Length: 60
Picture (tube, rainbow, N blue to C red):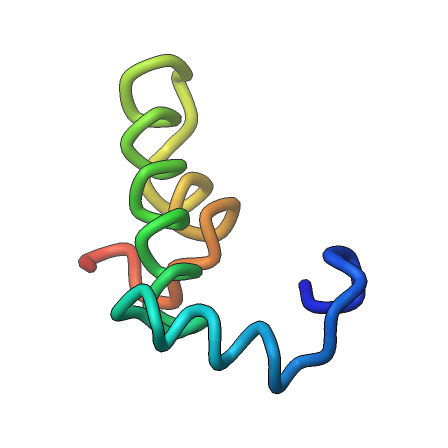
C-alpha cells in the first residue's frame, strides 16, 4: 500500500498511528465492510463472501 501511495512503509505506519489505527486494523475494517456489501448485494454463499473479503473463518 505504501508503494501505491509513493511513501515509505515507515511513513505510512506513522501516519496511520497518528490517526489512531494500524494497517491490519484498517484492512480488517475494509474486509468487513466489503463482506457486508456482498451479503446485501449478491447471492454468494457465506464461504464465498468470507474468502472474497479475506476473512479466514466464515463464522467471523
